[in-house]
Length: 119
Image (cartoon, rainbow, N blue to C red; front, side, top):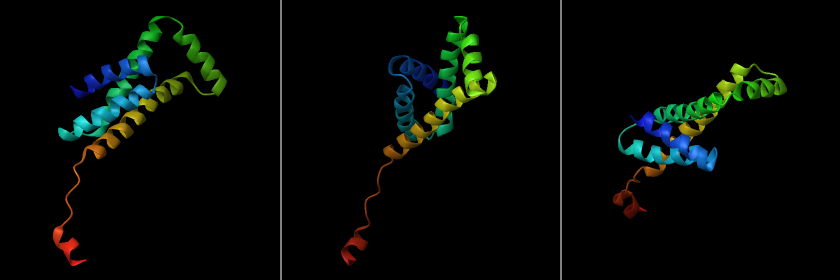
């Protein structure tokens, strides 16, 4: 369920904020996932799925095929590799953001008083 929520949120945030939206959604999802015992790879999968939805919407317009072939020709890689790179980018941002969000949400342990008193 979290993958679907993150996918929709990251697609919407990307539409509004650009690729920075993926990072914002991923950090927030990391905080929530930490509280629920989740893992960052689910957030990464959701972010990649969100961008896949956006790419599918662009593909329906008909210009996506021409664009990928032109860009793939410019950077000298196959169009499939370009598509994989386009999906790896939000996945890596999602995993990184979820990891940072989970670390930020950790409660810091109180220092041991006996160690402080001895010093």
